[in-house]
Image (cartoon, rainbow, N blue to C red):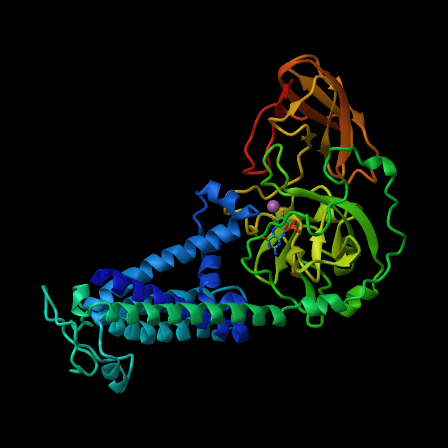
Length: 549
Ligand SMILES: Nc1nc2c(c(=O)[nH]1)N[C@H]1C(S)=C(S)[C@@H](COP(=O)(O)O)O[C@H]1N2
Ligand SMILES: [Mo]
């Protein structure tokens, strides 16, 4: 094995140990204080506003894993380099580890609401990285075990000069350089045959043990963090009954082949900027309503539960949803009408924006007029009969019929600040998204699937359409540019949910293109002009290709 390969692997091993230990420390200091999550969080929040596609991507459902994997790969590459450098110039290597530690510390302590203790995982990680790097480099150099044991300080300060290029005896004498002067490095045998077989085996064994123990530490850390999480508190929540019974769902809401009318909690799309869902204990939860109000209010969990509740089906939609895509879901929400709390706080007339702030610092802003116009906007605590799932904002989130999630649906909400749109930009606004985000009238074909093959004869085309708080008045289907045909609308609970539709098509052999468009109760028919999600929601007609055989 090549010298530099071994040194690089030693670096990667040191990084693994650092991250594993950091996860353990983070059990005490909080999951987002661990360096990987902390740095990942900073990346999410600080991507330049111009990188529009990335802005869309962080809205995306699968991108958290991608981001963390990417960060881990970059870190591994960095660690490899640090290992190679450290083998030649020990203190330069230590410097690179220190940079890693400093980046981790700064990321962790600058996260919203992070205390100084958030620095701990990264600090400990950096120290561990140095110690383990030193040990692994020594193994990589093929030092006799005895020599290793004799070292007073396994890690720091001992270095031996490489005897330069060319063959190296592979035996590094115990010659220590206290404090390791500049330029001292850990000599690594240049050729395998310097320590035929045995040195390499010992190195690989050491590396394997380090990586294995670190992975174990990381997993144990995550498990312990999970146990400290609020899932227990969530299970203990007993939801109060609503003022009236939940609306009855008519049997006719569901069209075969379309998505389920009510989305289960497990299937509900999840979008947020947090790499680890905030853990908020209801017993310490508080909501502060302040800013441009005459009567600031602070309300706790028990007070909230005592207030009269409503239970409503509301279809939530994400502004990042592409035409035909599925960042949309319909659930039964239980909660306190926000209008009543806002009325009690008594906003100043010029406070046209209700800024909602999550415990992790994320913000969104809804028009005050919308939240007070009598629609069923609420501080929700229940979702489909269960306490809010942690990922969907436990214990309390906002739900507003008719507004995209990024301007209204604050999860883990802890603060409501009355302000003016002119004075405050919420999270996504400086990142290129519109401050106003009413949901655009849209429709989608669920069956047949795009690209499907069907037998000639009767084929049911079906799907969903939505125009929350306005309601769907008409859905039309078009095959191959023929005249638009009116589809049959299914029942619905209210104008605040999506509505299913179907159309019986007598399909002839060949390739066909099928399109759909909806008209809402204001008389507006979806525009055919395609627009991307940014800045305020995609437009255009959903179309699919179908082959009839
Ligand atoms: N705290 C917090 N709340 C948030 C977000 C977020 O990033 N952080 N994202 C919003 C967006 S963009 C959407 S579309 C909805 C999605 O809610 P869901 O994950 O429950 O489907 O949550 C909103 N609430
Ligand atoms: Mo969203």
